[in-house]
Amino acid sequence: MTAQTRPDYESLDDASLARLIAARDAEAVRLVTQRNSQRLFRAAWSILKDRAEAEDAVQSAYLRAFAAIGGFEGRSALSTWLTRIAINEALGRARAAKRRRAQLDAASVAILDDYREKLMRGSIEGTAPDAELARTQLRGLLEQAIAGLPDDFRLVFVLREVEGLSVEETAEALDLVPATVKTRHLRARRRLRRALAPEVGAALDGAFPFAGADCGAMTERVVAAWCAQRVCIPPPNS
Image 1 (spheres, rainbow, N blue to C red):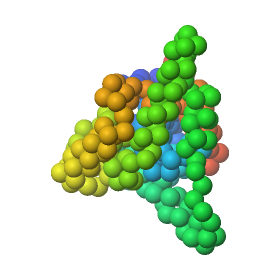
Image 2 (cartoon, helix red, strand yellow):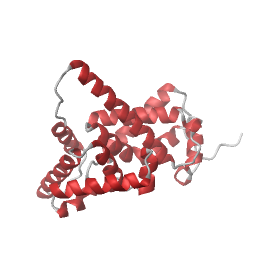
Image 3 (cartoon, rainbow, N blue to C red):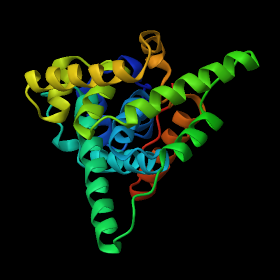
Image 4 (cartoon, helix red, strand yellow):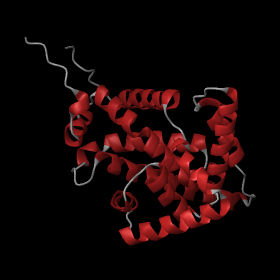
């Protein structure tokens, strides 16, 4: 019996990766998770404004998406499809939290400081101590200002400015018309300009980091949870 050749996962298109995930290929799950975790985390955080809750939402979104991957038709990019699922998961959690708060008749809890503390503790790769401190302070200012945007503006802003999606990709991910995306993006930028100095915008690429150890840990949790639910097929030997 001839040994099966290991696929070149990095060169596979979205449809091929989706078929492998549907066939319970753990390496395909790992690759897709690694490629998309930062975008999904940023989208979820822009809705939930809590790091731990956003991570849970992203993990749940992956598991939901992979369980339904047979329905992926390729009409949009796999990353866009996953982003929509993560946004819906986060919105559902936000609505549930709002209902719980109403039932308990409790005051809202300020969570941004806790989020920033956890974020800065584990996600920023530093160099000199002074540069590390300045970067931390700058990111804190950015995240606080972005968190203060209205929900609709914040989600559009994070997808456009932080994650780098086009107007069309953002519109598809959020099920909006492009004109609405442009309007919300413009209004978000105007609000932020009033709160921040112009030069702060250059640091947006570094805001909400979710890479390195964070991304790796998320990937392994998703793969483990996926394989625990199903019998995964490990990648074949070369």
